[in-house]
Image (tube, rainbow, N blue to C red; front, side, top):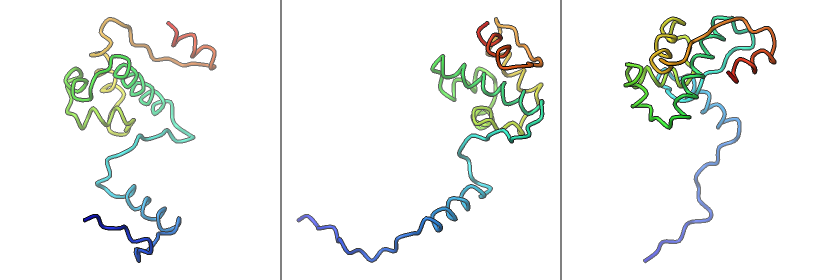
Length: 128
């Protein structure tokens, strides 16, 4: 026998404000694992460089259709550490560590860091 769904359920409906407060509580939890980090508006050159290396590793993974687990093996990290890179958790790594991991992926390609003065120069570099 099929049960009819009660239309007048007495389950309380949360307001937008309550839902937002619950969402913020999840984000602030020390056990929260989801989501990519973003650069602050006033990011330092070091933060930008670390972010860019993480981005290049993520692009490599997507272009080559590699699972997180396989990528972790290639760069010789745990899955959790690899996910930190893929989610741009740049405070977890020094720049030299990130470059070491990137070098394991881009063995045949030179790694370059530099000062890019304008967006046109950046696009020219990316095309090469």
